[in-house]
Image (cartoon, rainbow over all chains, first blue to last red; front, side):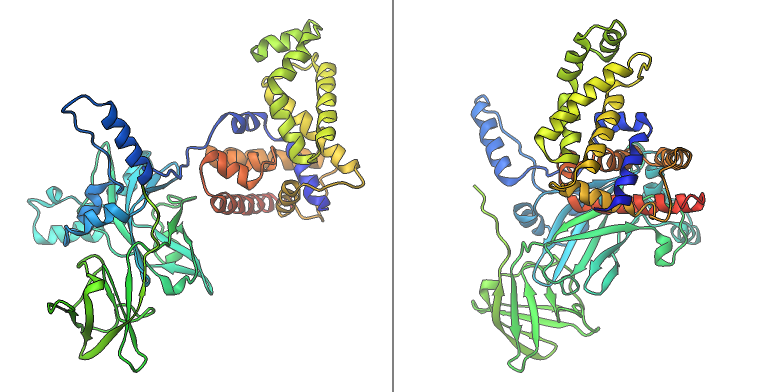
Length: 328
Length: 184
């Protein structure tokens, strides 16, 4: 029996009774809400249609939170959004009194996980923090080039630094960029960013916990200490896109998922040279040069015959399927 | 019946006060007792002692918050009973909470004397006053009400790991503050 612990707990009988009453009465507003599960949507839609009068049309919200922001993130491939709407899962909210971060959509294959997120200011401090990280296009109108660079140079970033427990202790996560000229100011202060996670760093992880840390821990001046305090994102690591493992018959493997290509599990983007041609069973071929980003293309893996990457030919070896859930 | 009227019954020495208190607060006080004792008959015994203690103390006491007043009494009585028990199941919740609480004040520091207790608890209350309400509620639910991590997470709609990590951080900060004030 931990006598000292019991003694300390006994001491806490003398806590301020305001706090005792407060804990009993109040519910925290920190939310981890699950919004609009697919079966619920189907049932809700059916219920609405059953009750609606002739000619009425039921509108059911899609799965993606802040759809406009996700569309902005993946502006280069409009075909991606309907696919995400089918498989993105549920938007997840995490907040403290200053900020709310919503994980709006997740693209997840066997190599990489990319989450598209929205950050919103909730109180005066949070709104200012978000707005300080955005420079809207209309704010730059009329400025000279030097003035524009001056404004952008001073701009702070609203994207949090995050740590996650990896194999060898905590690992600092480098989030991919945000568009600092996209967002809203005023009554609703918000913008969007993406979080990129290499699966290789977190093997067998079902839910990755990303703890927001203060910039000073990443070697950057801390202009808003404590702004992210208490925010821990929980990223489900289930795969929602299939991945084809290909090898060149000498042991080297590359990975082609429905949404991206990776040169290896650890060095996923590889060196600068990038020349990929995907040859399909139906005789068609698709050539991509220079680089590829997640979601830029949608690959039909069932139709892949072989690929040639930087002069080497790779053949399908194994299909790692997405973790699919039953829906009605 | 509202708390002011219940307290009024105590002052009038109307035994209906006990019935009203029991009806309104059995669930809350029972939960605290069970969290500590994990034994229904012991918890019921403590509840009975609690109503008696309240009957004897009001008046002259006139609690500002009856719920808080009751929970302090039931908690103290439960912990006293727990200490006196030679054998019996040690609830996992209490075991875990006591292990966590022990991190705050090392056993080289005595908190038995009234003066020492007052100084430390004043510092803890000051610290709690600096916390955002959400974190304060988390702390009090765990270390006063002795709710399990699972219960706290479930009722507040957050993950268990969030509760665990947040509590760990609060304990660390509190310990730092107590050290800064040279109390530990």
